[in-house]
Image (cartoon, rainbow, N blue to C red; front, side, top):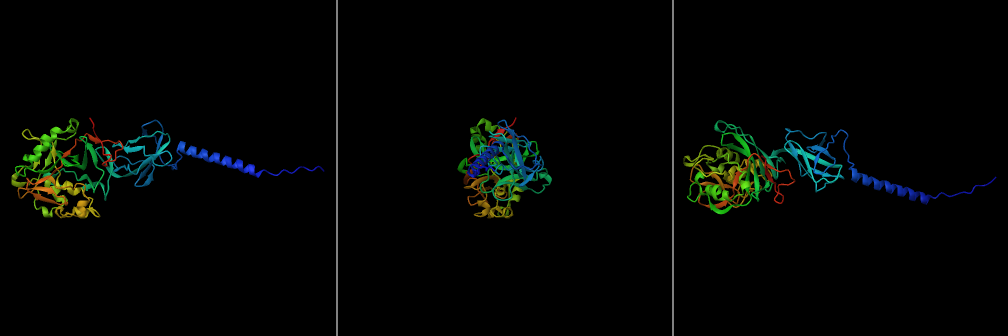
Length: 406
């Protein structure tokens, strides 16, 4: 019998070949992952093409109140996009060069996409559109608050029961206006010259226009004749840029009702009395454009503007239930972004020739009109002035941009 020669298997070579094949597969997998954005997307989740800056497919995952959804919320549900939480990327991680936003008609806008097969994780939360910009509503800390008012009767019938106000020590409510930093007070109730009740964006300059200026040089608390009113709507208005002037809504009636015993007045009471008809010495309770007066709708804050702007520290409702006169050196004041060094309001005292002032300690009190304090211009924007969805965050470094829509 002829014997066959025995050959030992080359295990080492086989291991090398297997290792090489494994490495090739791993590298190919990584390349595929990065190229085609392999994400864990549930089969029942809608995958749709979005509006992007550059051609290519983009896919969305929708979350409502942190729970994944088949569809994005619809108009009327009261949800907006949480831009801070939402993000886009090819590998599932955040790409800081990509910005995403949502328009009032619920169109998703994505900017900065350069790679196909990009996925965006979109988080929707309770919120409201403020002049075209969807902003989440918060219940504590800094942000946009929903303010509910009780129903009005008689002359006050028609006021909307809900406003939206920025509150907290430093909310993201900065805007660029007149090539300067201003801040949004909120979307608030106004009366137009034709007596209809509407809502407008109310804004305030970030820094004082005049420091240590009297409310009225003649020591009168009639806003319609005061030296500060004349200055704001005359010399100051004339210095504004033309495109800035075109954004100011001059079709507004400012309510300038007076307040009485301020030591016990809470925010909601200020709000009602500012819109009332009681005044000192039968002075006007409204200020609006007429042939004989100087009017461009530039005024000052109301005491209630300051009151609604607090986040209240640990408990906002506790501050709203406390007289603003007693806010001095409390968390109610320190949690309010409107606090500054002695700010004039445009509200007068009903029982004496004096005007309300916001002190540097954070409480509202009355003083004579020719005392010195700071002047911060306040005005309303036209309804066609919108906040751009261009990735700006509304903070001091990246303030919101405004545009007029014809």
